[in-house]
Length: 182
Ligand SMILES: [Cu+2]
Image (cartoon, rainbow, N blue to C red; front, side):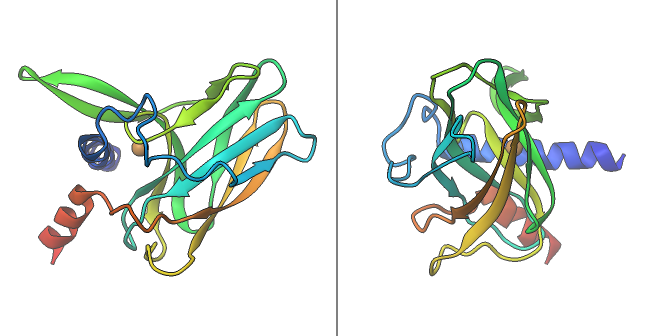
């Protein structure tokens, strides 16, 4: 039952993220960070660019987005972790029709495949890294960053300091959930 309620909560969050950012999968302007923000794995085979986090509140969830590229065959993002939240999952977004209305939901995926030499976008409405149960507020003030470690199928790891974007808001469903609790 715990799992079920958790799943519903996560689905709601994703639906909300998508609602705000619909049609951004193809690369909506403003959803990418400057290209200058980039980091490579120690063996120079994986490139991570334009990474950013949505602001979020303590105890709630938020998401991290980025562009990934592998210079080797058969690689994939298989895991992400962060000391700033209870759990981190790699998610995809999908559409489900409920009583005739399409609703965006999300689910955990085992991996995000990285075809050699191609940009793979993690964006609102698509793949993303879900930070579940934040240990503190992720404010959009100042120069706050989220430490995130990525692990790839071919063995590479990458430690990122992901900036929280000032021009983005926490998802509205999180705020509603907080109001109901109060
Ligand atoms: Cu998600």
